[in-house]
Image 1 (tube, rainbow, N blue to C red):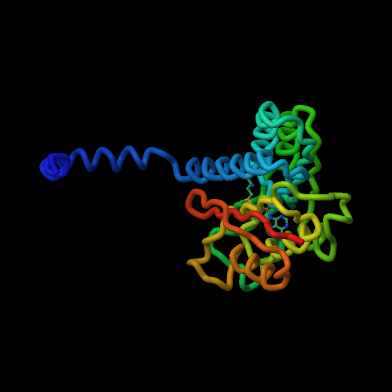
Image 2 (tube, rainbow, N blue to C red):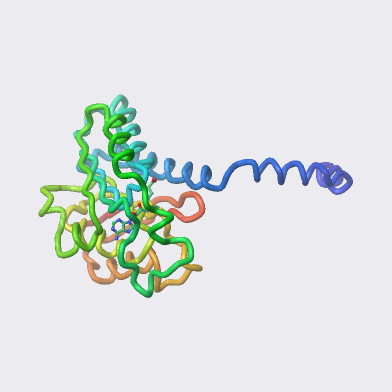
Length: 237
Ligand SMILES: C[S@@+](CC[C@H](N)C(=O)[O-])C[C@H]1O[C@@H](n2cnc3c(N)ncnc32)[C@H](O)[C@@H]1O
Protein backbone atom coordinates (compact mmCIF):
# COMPACT_ATOMS: atom_id res chain seq x y z
CA UNK A 1 0.00 0.00 0.00
CA UNK A 2 2.88 2.35 0.85
CA UNK A 3 4.38 1.70 -2.61
CA UNK A 4 1.08 2.51 -4.30
CA UNK A 5 0.86 5.71 -2.27
CA UNK A 6 4.37 6.72 -3.39
CA UNK A 7 3.53 6.02 -7.06
CA UNK A 8 0.24 7.94 -6.84
CA UNK A 9 2.04 10.97 -5.49
CA UNK A 10 5.03 10.76 -7.87
CA UNK A 11 3.72 10.04 -11.34
CA UNK A 12 7.19 10.61 -12.80
CA UNK A 13 8.06 7.08 -11.50
CA UNK A 14 5.32 5.64 -13.67
CA UNK A 15 6.51 7.71 -16.66
CA UNK A 16 10.09 6.57 -16.11
CA UNK A 17 9.17 2.87 -15.96
CA UNK A 18 7.06 3.21 -19.13
CA UNK A 19 10.06 4.74 -20.92
CA UNK A 20 12.30 1.92 -19.68
CA UNK A 21 9.98 -0.74 -21.06
CA UNK A 22 9.78 1.08 -24.39
CA UNK A 23 13.57 1.22 -24.63
CA UNK A 24 13.52 -2.48 -25.45
CA UNK A 25 12.87 -2.54 -29.23
CA UNK A 26 9.89 -4.67 -30.22
CA UNK A 27 11.86 -6.70 -32.79
CA UNK A 28 14.47 -7.55 -30.20
CA UNK A 29 11.72 -8.82 -27.93
CA UNK A 30 10.21 -10.92 -30.71
CA UNK A 31 13.66 -12.30 -31.59
CA UNK A 32 14.44 -13.15 -27.98
CA UNK A 33 11.14 -14.99 -27.64
CA UNK A 34 11.98 -17.07 -30.72
CA UNK A 35 15.42 -17.93 -29.34
CA UNK A 36 13.80 -19.04 -26.11
CA UNK A 37 11.32 -21.32 -27.90
CA UNK A 38 14.06 -22.93 -29.98
CA UNK A 39 16.18 -23.42 -26.86
CA UNK A 40 13.29 -24.96 -24.93
CA UNK A 41 12.35 -27.30 -27.79
CA UNK A 42 15.95 -28.43 -28.26
CA UNK A 43 16.35 -28.97 -24.52
CA UNK A 44 13.10 -30.93 -24.11
CA UNK A 45 14.06 -33.23 -26.99
CA UNK A 46 17.66 -33.64 -25.81
CA UNK A 47 16.46 -34.49 -22.33
CA UNK A 48 13.99 -37.06 -23.71
CA UNK A 49 16.55 -38.51 -26.11
CA UNK A 50 14.34 -37.68 -29.11
CA UNK A 51 16.80 -37.92 -31.96
CA UNK A 52 16.30 -36.74 -35.54
CA UNK A 53 16.51 -33.59 -37.59
CA UNK A 54 15.78 -29.95 -36.85
CA UNK A 55 13.46 -28.67 -39.59
CA UNK A 56 12.81 -24.97 -40.08
CA UNK A 57 10.19 -23.54 -42.43
CA UNK A 58 10.99 -19.86 -42.96
CA UNK A 59 14.72 -19.20 -42.56
CA UNK A 60 14.90 -15.57 -43.76
CA UNK A 61 18.14 -14.14 -42.29
CA UNK A 62 19.07 -17.44 -40.63
CA UNK A 63 18.61 -16.00 -37.17
CA UNK A 64 16.75 -18.89 -35.55
CA UNK A 65 18.46 -21.48 -37.77
CA UNK A 66 21.93 -20.46 -36.62
CA UNK A 67 20.73 -20.25 -33.06
CA UNK A 68 19.40 -23.82 -33.20
CA UNK A 69 22.81 -25.06 -34.34
CA UNK A 70 24.48 -23.14 -31.55
CA UNK A 71 22.12 -24.45 -28.88
CA UNK A 72 22.56 -27.99 -30.12
CA UNK A 73 26.33 -27.74 -29.69
CA UNK A 74 25.90 -26.48 -26.13
CA UNK A 75 23.37 -29.17 -25.25
CA UNK A 76 25.63 -31.91 -26.58
CA UNK A 77 28.08 -30.99 -23.83
CA UNK A 78 25.41 -31.95 -21.29
CA UNK A 79 23.42 -34.71 -23.02
CA UNK A 80 26.03 -36.20 -25.36
CA UNK A 81 26.19 -36.31 -29.18
CA UNK A 82 22.77 -36.15 -30.86
CA UNK A 83 23.71 -36.40 -34.57
CA UNK A 84 21.12 -33.81 -35.54
CA UNK A 85 20.89 -32.52 -39.10
CA UNK A 86 19.60 -28.96 -39.53
CA UNK A 87 17.40 -28.43 -42.58
CA UNK A 88 15.92 -25.08 -43.56
CA UNK A 89 13.38 -24.22 -46.25
CA UNK A 90 12.90 -20.75 -47.72
CA UNK A 91 12.50 -18.89 -50.99
CA UNK A 92 14.54 -15.96 -49.63
CA UNK A 93 12.09 -13.91 -51.73
CA UNK A 94 9.12 -13.95 -49.40
CA UNK A 95 5.84 -15.79 -49.87
CA UNK A 96 5.33 -15.88 -53.64
CA UNK A 97 1.66 -16.23 -54.52
CA UNK A 98 -0.41 -15.20 -51.49
CA UNK A 99 -3.84 -16.84 -51.22
CA UNK A 100 -6.88 -14.64 -50.50
CA UNK A 101 -7.25 -16.07 -47.01
CA UNK A 102 -3.62 -15.20 -46.24
CA UNK A 103 -3.72 -11.50 -47.16
CA UNK A 104 -2.32 -9.49 -44.24
CA UNK A 105 -0.93 -5.94 -44.05
CA UNK A 106 2.49 -7.00 -42.76
CA UNK A 107 3.16 -10.16 -44.75
CA UNK A 108 4.42 -9.18 -48.17
CA UNK A 109 7.38 -10.19 -50.32
CA UNK A 110 9.15 -6.86 -49.96
CA UNK A 111 9.38 -7.14 -46.16
CA UNK A 112 10.71 -10.68 -46.25
CA UNK A 113 13.12 -10.64 -49.21
CA UNK A 114 16.75 -11.03 -48.19
CA UNK A 115 20.14 -11.43 -49.83
CA UNK A 116 20.33 -15.19 -50.14
CA UNK A 117 24.07 -15.08 -50.76
CA UNK A 118 24.77 -13.19 -47.54
CA UNK A 119 22.47 -15.42 -45.49
CA UNK A 120 23.97 -18.65 -46.85
CA UNK A 121 27.50 -17.46 -46.27
CA UNK A 122 26.64 -16.50 -42.69
CA UNK A 123 24.97 -19.87 -42.04
CA UNK A 124 28.08 -21.63 -43.37
CA UNK A 125 30.25 -19.59 -41.05
CA UNK A 126 28.06 -20.32 -38.03
CA UNK A 127 27.52 -24.02 -38.71
CA UNK A 128 30.91 -25.02 -37.25
CA UNK A 129 31.02 -28.42 -38.99
CA UNK A 130 27.46 -29.35 -38.10
CA UNK A 131 25.38 -31.12 -40.74
CA UNK A 132 22.96 -28.75 -42.43
CA UNK A 133 20.98 -28.30 -45.65
CA UNK A 134 19.15 -25.29 -47.03
CA UNK A 135 16.40 -26.00 -49.54
CA UNK A 136 15.79 -22.89 -51.58
CA UNK A 137 12.49 -22.24 -53.34
CA UNK A 138 8.82 -21.48 -52.90
CA UNK A 139 7.10 -24.19 -50.88
CA UNK A 140 4.70 -24.98 -53.72
CA UNK A 141 7.79 -26.14 -55.64
CA UNK A 142 9.86 -27.65 -52.83
CA UNK A 143 7.20 -29.15 -50.52
CA UNK A 144 3.89 -29.63 -52.33
CA UNK A 145 3.05 -33.31 -52.97
CA UNK A 146 6.35 -34.26 -51.35
CA UNK A 147 7.25 -35.48 -47.90
CA UNK A 148 10.37 -35.76 -45.79
CA UNK A 149 10.90 -39.21 -47.33
CA UNK A 150 11.65 -37.57 -50.70
CA UNK A 151 14.46 -35.60 -49.00
CA UNK A 152 15.77 -38.65 -47.14
CA UNK A 153 14.81 -37.09 -43.82
CA UNK A 154 13.94 -39.83 -41.36
CA UNK A 155 12.62 -38.46 -38.08
CA UNK A 156 12.07 -34.93 -36.87
CA UNK A 157 13.34 -33.83 -33.50
CA UNK A 158 12.20 -30.20 -33.62
CA UNK A 159 10.10 -28.46 -36.27
CA UNK A 160 10.01 -24.67 -36.32
CA UNK A 161 7.10 -23.30 -38.31
CA UNK A 162 7.97 -19.69 -39.01
CA UNK A 163 6.30 -19.04 -42.37
CA UNK A 164 3.48 -16.93 -40.89
CA UNK A 165 0.61 -17.75 -43.25
CA UNK A 166 -1.91 -20.60 -43.47
CA UNK A 167 -1.00 -21.99 -46.91
CA UNK A 168 2.77 -22.34 -46.41
CA UNK A 169 2.12 -23.78 -42.94
CA UNK A 170 -0.31 -26.30 -44.43
CA UNK A 171 2.31 -27.36 -47.00
CA UNK A 172 5.01 -27.63 -44.30
CA UNK A 173 2.84 -29.77 -42.00
CA UNK A 174 1.78 -32.17 -44.79
CA UNK A 175 5.46 -32.41 -45.77
CA UNK A 176 6.71 -33.31 -42.28
CA UNK A 177 3.93 -35.78 -41.40
CA UNK A 178 5.92 -39.02 -41.89
CA UNK A 179 8.79 -37.65 -39.82
CA UNK A 180 6.68 -36.89 -36.75
CA UNK A 181 7.52 -39.30 -33.95
CA UNK A 182 6.61 -39.51 -30.30
CA UNK A 183 8.49 -36.61 -28.72
CA UNK A 184 8.79 -34.38 -31.81
CA UNK A 185 8.29 -30.77 -30.74
CA UNK A 186 6.57 -28.43 -33.19
CA UNK A 187 7.04 -24.74 -32.49
CA UNK A 188 4.70 -22.24 -34.15
CA UNK A 189 6.17 -18.76 -34.07
CA UNK A 190 3.01 -16.96 -35.17
CA UNK A 191 0.13 -18.86 -33.67
CA UNK A 192 -2.14 -15.97 -32.76
CA UNK A 193 -1.92 -13.43 -35.55
CA UNK A 194 -4.84 -12.59 -37.87
CA UNK A 195 -6.81 -11.08 -34.99
CA UNK A 196 -7.27 -14.49 -33.40
CA UNK A 197 -9.31 -15.69 -36.40
CA UNK A 198 -9.62 -19.48 -36.10
CA UNK A 199 -9.85 -19.82 -39.88
CA UNK A 200 -6.57 -18.10 -40.66
CA UNK A 201 -2.82 -18.32 -40.23
CA UNK A 202 -0.70 -20.99 -38.60
CA UNK A 203 -3.53 -21.73 -36.13
CA UNK A 204 -5.96 -22.71 -38.92
CA UNK A 205 -3.38 -24.83 -40.74
CA UNK A 206 -2.55 -26.76 -37.57
CA UNK A 207 -6.23 -27.26 -36.73
CA UNK A 208 -6.85 -28.65 -40.21
CA UNK A 209 -3.85 -30.97 -39.83
CA UNK A 210 -5.01 -32.28 -36.45
CA UNK A 211 -8.54 -32.90 -37.77
CA UNK A 212 -7.16 -34.73 -40.80
CA UNK A 213 -4.74 -36.94 -38.85
CA UNK A 214 -6.40 -37.65 -35.47
CA UNK A 215 -4.03 -40.59 -34.96
CA UNK A 216 -1.29 -38.08 -34.06
CA UNK A 217 -1.91 -36.58 -30.63
CA UNK A 218 -0.40 -33.29 -29.57
CA UNK A 219 0.01 -31.80 -26.16
CA UNK A 220 0.78 -28.13 -25.64
CA UNK A 221 4.19 -27.79 -24.02
CA UNK A 222 4.81 -24.06 -23.82
CA UNK A 223 3.86 -20.61 -25.03
CA UNK A 224 6.42 -18.00 -25.82
CA UNK A 225 6.58 -14.28 -26.45
CA UNK A 226 3.58 -12.62 -28.03
CA UNK A 227 2.62 -15.30 -30.49
CA UNK A 228 4.49 -18.54 -30.10
CA UNK A 229 3.03 -21.87 -29.03
CA UNK A 230 4.69 -25.27 -29.04
CA UNK A 231 3.27 -28.79 -29.05
CA UNK A 232 4.77 -32.22 -28.48
CA UNK A 233 3.61 -35.25 -30.46
CA UNK A 234 2.56 -37.90 -27.97
CA UNK A 235 0.83 -41.25 -27.56
CA UNK A 236 1.71 -42.34 -31.07
CA UNK A 237 1.04 -46.00 -31.78
C1 LIG B 1 9.28 -14.62 -40.31
S1 LIG B 1 10.38 -15.05 -41.59
C2 LIG B 1 11.40 -16.28 -40.88
C3 LIG B 1 12.29 -15.75 -39.81
C4 LIG B 1 13.42 -16.66 -39.40
N1 LIG B 1 12.97 -17.92 -38.85
C5 LIG B 1 14.31 -15.96 -38.39
O1 LIG B 1 14.12 -16.17 -37.18
O2 LIG B 1 15.15 -15.17 -38.81
C6 LIG B 1 9.32 -15.93 -42.68
C7 LIG B 1 10.04 -16.57 -43.85
O3 LIG B 1 9.18 -17.53 -44.45
C8 LIG B 1 9.45 -17.56 -45.84
N2 LIG B 1 8.27 -18.09 -46.54
C9 LIG B 1 6.98 -17.84 -46.24
N3 LIG B 1 6.17 -18.44 -47.13
C10 LIG B 1 6.97 -19.10 -48.00
C11 LIG B 1 6.73 -19.91 -49.15
N4 LIG B 1 5.48 -20.15 -49.57
N5 LIG B 1 7.78 -20.42 -49.80
C12 LIG B 1 9.04 -20.18 -49.37
N6 LIG B 1 9.35 -19.42 -48.30
C13 LIG B 1 8.32 -18.88 -47.62
C14 LIG B 1 9.73 -16.11 -46.20
O4 LIG B 1 10.55 -16.01 -47.34
C15 LIG B 1 10.43 -15.58 -44.95
O5 LIG B 1 11.82 -15.57 -45.12
